[in-house]
Length: 429
Ligand SMILES: *Cc1c(COP(=O)(O)O)cnc(C)c1O
Image 1: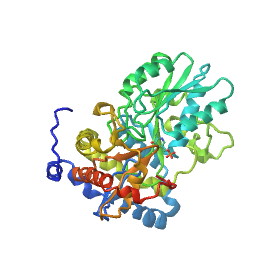
Image 2: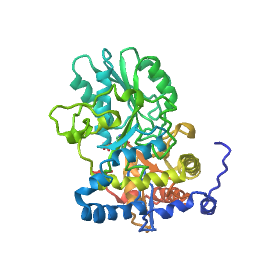
Image 3: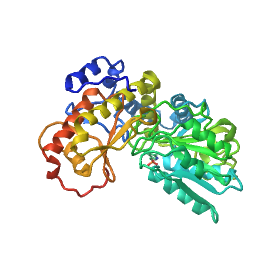
Image 4: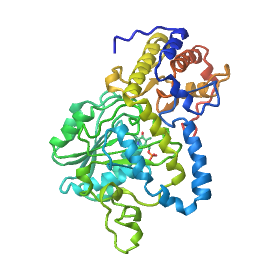
């Protein structure tokens, strides 16, 4: 990546935008405020215009007019249909992915099922960079499974990355499951999925990947890497909408061997027989629990189609260029005024967001979001203790957005505008 030649200044950013083959995808999103630079698509993706139309169609036609008949006109098969679409984005096969529930709940179902299957082994391995809900769910599982079960966290040496030696130490003959985020939510560190999966398999452990910060951001090849299980959310880089249902992946060979700990009627063989005894459905549907939230679920499709049209390889290329550009701007404008880089410098091991660390990060974010001295509002997010986290979403992030962000960040520091804000942290950051 050292072959990229960036130049400082807004003109260069505009030239990059003019030459960007993906630039027209931005027009497919609802953008109501041209003075708003949105760099938080890794927390909540923007609204695709096609999803807006879809939601109207679902309410007026499917719910309003067709009523219950809609279950047989598409709703019932929707979880699997969306799963098959998503499978093409994360390198899985048809019938291996299904959309349902939340990421937290899907992680619970798959991790619990894996632990039950791996009789005799009592350890789960994760790392201390993982997203808190993942660690909480795993803590709950070892507690519920009983004496001897435990969770071990491979430590990050530098607070940003986890090296293979740390995993090598943690994964042993007692390890049933290795559960990791493919891309870390704070630093954007990205594991070598294939190498980690191989290591775990050599020791007889299964691997469960959380793809929340990876799917739609980087190319993922679950099948090629031999991955066993995966989960992830659809409201970040997949642009599925706030609280949209998540997904889960179980590789074909494991599907009939694992049983969900939540025995709901949607995961039962032939649910409309209404028989009294539970028997798991065949295939991926056995990991469903109950009725899906149709309005939210129907809004997911268009976001997936847009990603497939753009192509993950093309998106990755632009994403790497854009994160490299931001690192360049950091070196030029931000390093000398108190920022440090909270993400790996090497794009090969980095996802599509970037963290910049500064002791005043919280108030800096406030100043960007609710500026007092300019009309340009910029939305990144704040991640404790000191990160300004910047989500780069190549479907709609422009080089000009990134340049303006760096320029404004420098202003906020040099003018001390951040000092006008309180440092009391609010509910959702
Ligand atoms: C966003 C995210 C989640 C979110 O879980 P929910 O159940 O949707 O709240 C979980 N894990 C990771 C790694 C995430 O990035």
